[in-house]
Image (cartoon, rainbow, N blue to C red):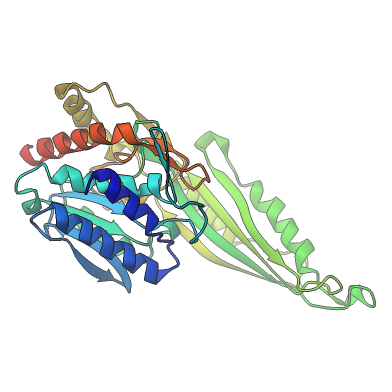
Length: 358
């Protein structure tokens, strides 16, 4: 098997986070691929009822952190796998099955890597890592470095990420006939609309704080005053203080109708990934890149969060975005540049070797 064939198999094994059977299947396939390449065998471990791929040391000094679940329901791409010249397309190819595969091929070039290195791939990252968070934090606290194989930003690694918070607001009104006696109802749709406008005001561009109402549901029939409405909110910021500010504001929201009931669930999920946790490893990476004849890698801060946020908050040195070069995470044009994979594998291999020696 070649790396391209292995990547094709991983992408065609669709693994939406919510499908536990599919997530078990992709972990099994990842183990099969690994065990055909490496002497030390990979295994499946269970963490709070979810499968986790594990290869290497049980007390690693260097953790290669991955996830192999995707945001895509099965059948979202037709065909599931497609190659157009130097571009491979498919669900999860960029985020982040190519990065996971690069980790396997990198350790294959390092004798006795399993004594100090572990590859850990979770299956719940796309929904906030509620099952695997404690595992990630345990590994981070005892490791020397956590290298996150999330996709790069046009080849640049990621030295900063926003923290995230997620909320669902449920508004309980009262149903009535929309034509005969609408005044006897409490319209959950109009009241949740007021909440949408109110929470949007909490955004703060100075700190890159975004507050985005996303999914909203209300009502049952066209001739009934809606009795129930729900609203999901996605919040991100580079500032931990901003997340705390908004958490307090959201949890203290009031409805304009005292007879309605407003409930808030959710909270802060991932803390920000700050440069104080990443720049030391980034500087080592650039030195390694120069030593092996590669161009400067570059770095960036981005809005999306990852499990690297958890690792950094637990005290680890972290470097993120070491995975694939491509485009379209969570988008229909998701793709990787195939010609970039060998260079990324070589860079990761040399980087791990340097960290082992350090």
